[in-house]
Amino acid sequence: MTKGVKLCIAAVAALFVGSVIACVILFKPSASRYIEIVQDGKVIQTVDLANADDQTFRIEAPDGGWNEVVIESGTVRISDADCPDHTCIKTGVLRSESVPIVCLPHKLVIRYCDGNGGEQ
Amino acid sequence: MRTRRLTELALLTAAALIVFIIELRIPNILPIPVKLGLANIFTVYAVYRYPAKDVSLLVFTRIALGTLFSGNFSAIIYSMAGAVLCLVGMLLIKRVIPINYLWLCSIIGALLHNTAQIAVAVLLTGTPAVLVYYPVLIAAGCIAGLFTGLCAQYMLNRLMPHNKDQEVQK
Image (cartoon, rainbow over all chains, first blue to last red; front, top):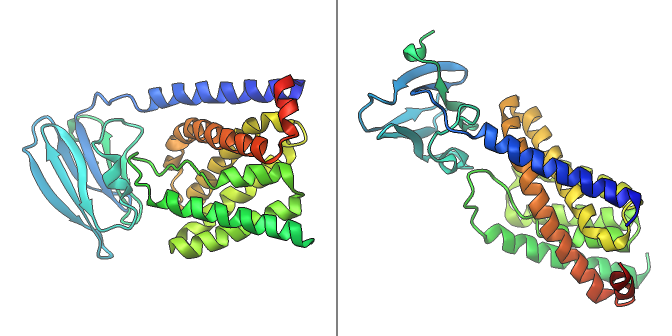
């Protein structure tokens, strides 16, 4: 085993451990109970998850697409959408502050926000 | 290019394409779009067997035809960026890493591939928030790179029996 190989193995191992730790920190569940729904940079709706009734509603994108948002028992997720990649659906339930539910084709973001409703 | 070399490269490209298409059919159960990148087995193998020019030819043919078959043309800029950085990185790192540590080269290639793809994602979408997924892609890249690298390593040992002796001495 040459020096270069050892160096590479060490670097790759360090990267792997570092990224796993970063994942754990980044994806830890949020303590906040308020979420905001942002469309094209503007907050269109704020929801208090702790007090919200279970509901399903559709958010229309200005250019014709739609996302179906489901709020049930204090969680929020996108259940259906007509975007091509369905990344927003696969993201599943919103858990962490650093990882919002994003639908890039429809410029839609659902994320945790600070308390008091987060109105701006 | 000699006929023998041309045939070998064509065979590798065809095999890589078949694997690529089979992988497309495997549904992605993860919330983020990560793949094993099984077609990379052939790229890593070729990096150690053929000159840089031939490997580039193999990779670009594979991507062009793969895009055609998958019908996902918007993805070509991601595939290309990933492949170019991965290829350049592997061709350079090959000078440091001997052939019986080929799997290591594959991991580094996978990491570079993911780095290029996330860089393109940030540039194209203009959302630096995508970078949150970078640690996930690094971790996934290590695992996927190790897997494809070991596959390539076994393939190489089968196809180049004289390499077995080196493998034993290790």
